[in-house]
Length: 209
Image 1 (tube, rainbow, N blue to C red):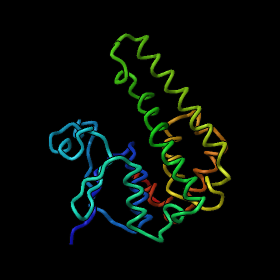
Image 2: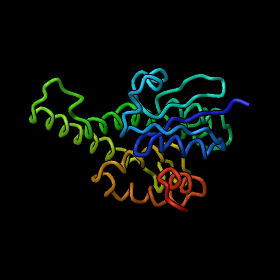
Image 3: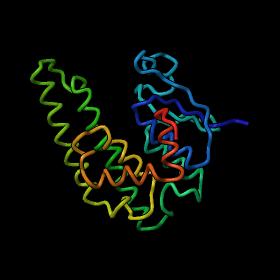
């Protein structure tokens, strides 16, 4: 029987996808893509995702799915009732989708600019690269600060977790300033205590429960 596949690597957006698979009750075949060995630039991987980014999911139909937000939405649809996102048509879902797109379209790209500023300028001077990194850090602080202010606590929607909380905590974890915000400290503790999210997160990081 065809199964899902997940091309993943520690330290990437594949963390939230790993959690989403576990939450959806789906066990994919996992294929490690070692970015330290530039395996994400290998021809066979680029044939799946020409952008060379991780994660990538392959549906049982054989459809190749890239972009973390698209994978999360598809897993939510494939696991109706699991609760990755609030019910369709609800105000809670609209709020969740808003922040999912903010994270995907703004926070994640800002993170890439923070960590790889040289990729985002044609001026290779130290000053130009530093300017890109500084602007990216400013953008990250602003975006994550706005999200922290929106959290009803302990999760974005109050007492109910969604996969957006996992995505937000993952990105915040890459930024010391965001990690220090009370809202994100509370969020992380609540996620680690969740019966499904906590164990799945720790497995991804190869930490025992």
